[in-house]
Image (cartoon, rainbow, N blue to C red; front, side, top):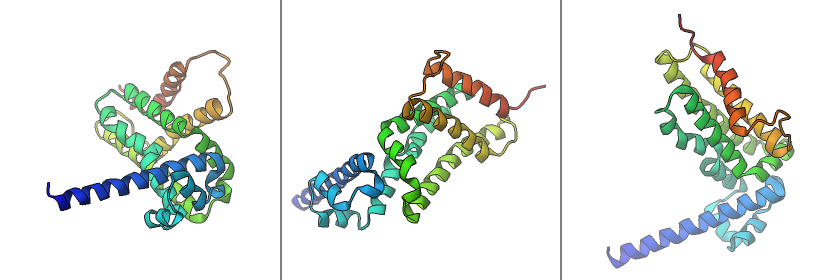
Length: 210
């Protein structure tokens, strides 16, 4: 590697490190104050950079949220688990996907709590971003379901609706257990809960054999 190439590589590394510090700072402040409450000045201070430097990387606060959704969301977790899920039978695949989804929500529990409370106050552009990422989340799982329909494992139901139902079950579970602190009176473990919910769910989408 030439001196010029080393210099360029070092500059690229510094730029990436600064960008990641800004994103980490934004995630911290969004989790504490919400998207609406956290200012770009506060994010810059938390990241240890000048506000002008922040704007060089992200000209608008909305772009910070967009990058957080792209790189640190449930969609990323789902995309990461899908190659493994495609190698498994149906129920173990759905168990793996459910765990990945719940883990991603719990990894940003405070942000999810604030998101639910302040969503009506979000700018329309941010709401549109959230809707787009939710659509991508549903479509990623729906594609998997269509593959299973093509191989005659699942019956012909609307794949997107089936994906929405799946995530709805486990998002509600996350809210009740992690955000509201509800404990199942039966004393079931989370693993038992996931297995039970999937047994009920799978009966609605699996193709009946004759």
